Length: 163
Image (tube, rainbow, N blue to C red; front, side, top):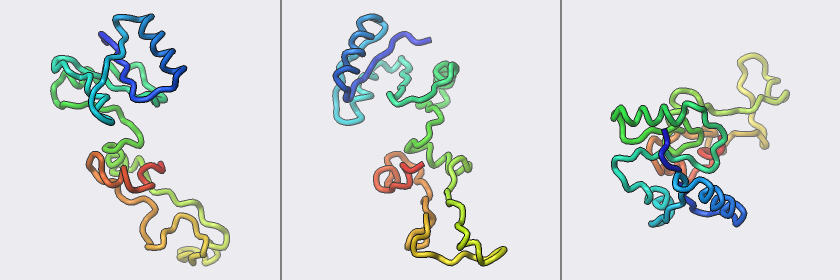
């Protein structure tokens, strides 16, 4: 299903780069490291120049990829219902809002301590000076995730990277 593998290198350790060069040489012409242009993340997409080609981007920090993932994403793209197909990525700038909306990501509150439970059934525990996960402004520990790419949540709020 894959015709070629393009390795787009933004930064690499010397040993990793040497291994990558070895891998590309061993599997040429199917593997390559094309030159990239542009700045920051734009470099990744500078190799995507053929409008008839379907590009599958896989980050270097992938932990698991099922056998069906790439064929299914390519099939979905070929149905022409969308321009971009994404895997179900946890801690993703856009998908985090979806995960929060469907309840896959929830606010976490540690269990109450014994002295916090002393008030009995239905009692609201008194605040202690060292109470965990309670902000001074009484806001929830995790704010709603903004539903847009490159949102303030991604760049300015620790909560978005905390799960």
